[in-house]
Image 1 (tube, rainbow, N blue to C red):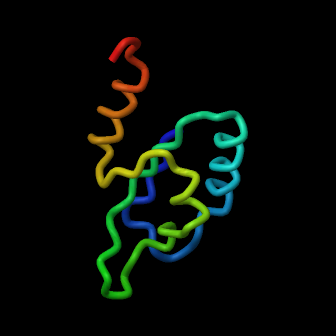
Image 2: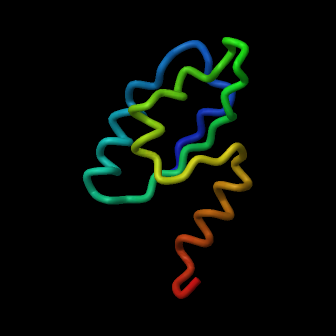
Length: 77
């Protein structure tokens, strides 16, 4: 599962939180695409322990997520 939270600041994505739970139950890899905390109070609302702990991977760009998906789907790598 790839979840992109880039730029999200206003409202939590409740539906995506549920999807994280389903992916975890079925032992599917979760890739969280989100910028790093900036320490200035402008952090993405989705940098929450519930989501970050379920995500097996956290990357800052969609390009890195795509490379990770390719790597995870390539047998023997």
